[in-house]
Every structure is written in structure tokens, then in C-alpha cells.
Length: 449
Image 1 (cartoon, helix red, strand yellow):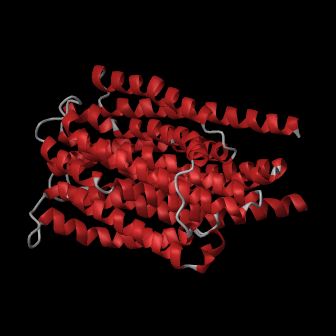
Image 2 (cartoon, rainbow, N blue to C red):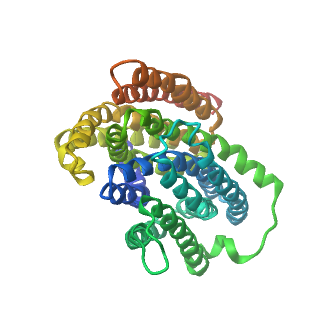
Image 3 (cartoon, helix red, strand yellow):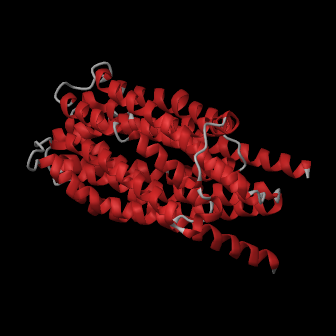
């Protein structure tokens, strides 16, 4: 009977964490969705320009903000080990790392437009894509510092403030986009490139709002980040980077394979790129479900890891992977039934819609693999095992998926479908290797106990 209660308890704990994180993830992914939909209603050129720019911005943004995910398992471990005095220090040192990384990321994005011709991006797409990248670079320090504060808040068990801010940002982006896309007063009409300016402003507003809330709220009193100024501490900087850099790189390897697909396909014409962008956008929104579950698993596994409670840690992993399987099956069914209606939200162009309908079938095919691999990675992060998963994702996506995708897209009649077959192969390899590593880690801890 106790076993049943513990399963129910773990499900309840996971969902309590996961639901606000899910809303946050949807809201943050929704920022890109709003850009894609608004650009799609301007012209296929605007949508294709955004596809290329976002294809370069998102991997850079997720690499640097992904490093800041290290804050979550470190705070969760300190909470589980009942050493609250460490939590404020971890958060302050994370902000230092975030500020430095955000500045570097902003500089990287200023250089990116000069690489567009080298990537073979058509000249017609370069002006708007370049302006978007220059503009959005100024928001990068805010993105990374927001990620650090978000990890701190969620690991303490307060995901709701982040959720509320993300939802407000979603509402604020639409008028901001309108101002910069269509022009207003002194602001010129910038087309789809205006999304870059709007998003950069929004990222700073989000960071300042969350920082103010954490400073004012009594919930954070015992671990207050802003109670005192703390200079850079090499020990913690090293720990954050040692744990975070493999996380950021693992996310980068996975996301960049999806994002660079738009660049691989750009010589095949605006219609194919636009259709691919729609299919990628749909599957990116749906990926937020297993991704949110994985973040909740990192927090629960990280807390038990701090307590050294290996039996409970294995229990939460089993419950999490089972929940992930159920979510993936529901997603596959919904995509199959409603794909035409979903695509109609993005475009009224018949040719684009038909190709997108076909490509969504490939997205359905990899839902289970995607859910399992991201859940396994979330559990491994909670156990502070990040280096192994980094190498696994690099091999799966760049050694296996990338060459397969390029070959099938460029050298066979498959075209866009070839890239998607490459993605399915890569996700399958990642899934098998990450689950194997999780099994071995659990076995090793069980033996040591």
C-alpha cells in the first residue's frame, strides 16, 4: 500500500512543479510563435527571413541560458542537504556568471550577420535577418540573468512568479511587435526584423520584473539574493560552469540541429523553408510538455540526491518516465487528428500548407523518443551528471543526424523530408544512450549503498 501512496505522492509533487513550469515554457516558446505568425502574415519572404534569423538566434540563446540551468540542481541539492546558507551564494554567483555570459552572447550575435553569406543564405533574406540578429543581441544579458533567477526560484519550489511574468510578456509582445514591424511615430517600419527590437526590450522588462519581485517578496527572505553585494567567488564560478557548460552544450547540440535545418533547406526556396518553419514551430511548442516534465524531474531528483535517498530517487524517475510516455501518446493523437487546423493558424498559402501537413507526420513519428530522451537527461542533471549527456547529444545530433539529414535533403529526392528523417535517427540514438546511462548511474549508486 505504501508503494501506491508514494507513486501518487510523487505524481502530485511532479505535477505541482511541472504545471507552472509548463505554462512558463509555453509562454516563452509563444514569444517565437507570435513572431512566426505575425511575420507569416506579412509575406513568405518575411517568414523565411525570420526562420533564418531565429535559426541562428535560438541556438546561441539556449547555449548561454542553458548553462544557467546549473543553478537549479545546485540550489535543489543545497535545499535537500538542508544547507540554506549556500543557496543565496549560489544565486549571487549565478548572476555574475549570467551577466558575463550574456554579454559574450550579445557580441556573438553582432558578428552573426556577417556569416549569413557563408551559410549560403539567399541575398533576399539577408537584410531583415541581419537587422533582427543585431537588435536581439542587446537583450542577451537580460536573457541569461533571467534564466539564473528562474532556476533559483523554481528549485526553491516557487515556479509561479516566473509563470506570471512569462504570461504578461506574451501579452506585451504583440503591441511591441506591431510598433516595430509596422512603424509608429519616430519608429520606422522594419517588417519582420522589428521582432528583434521588440523581443530585446521585452527580455529586459522580464528580468527587471522578476528581480524586483524576488527582492520584495517575503518567500525569499531566508535565501535573499539581493540582501548583500558579493564579489566573484572562483570556487562557485567553477562549480556552476563545470555543471552548466555541458548542459548548455547538450541543449545547443540538440536545438541547433533543428534550427540549422532551415539554413540547410534555404536553397530549396521560400515555400519549402516556410513549410518547414511551420512544422518546426508546432513541434517546438509541443516539446515544452516533456521539457517541463524534465525540469520538474531535475528538481525532484536533485533534492533526493542531496538527501542521498537513492530509493526515492529511482521511484521519481520511474514515475516521470511513465508520465512522459503518456504525454507523448496523447500528443501524437492530437497532432494526427488536428494537424490541418493547426497549420491553418500559421498560413493561408495552399502550397506551404500542403508541404507542412506532410512534414508534421515526421514530427508525430519521433514524439516518444523525444519524451524519453529529454526525461532521461532531466534525471541525469538532477544527479549532477552533465558531461556524459553532453557527449551523447553531440554524437547523436552532429555525428549521426546532421550528415544523414544533409545527404537525404540535398542529394536525394526527399528534399525537406530528408532533414526530418535525420532528426528521427538522431533522437533515437540519443534516447537509447541516455536511458542506458541513467540505468548505469542508478545501478552504481545502488551498489555503493
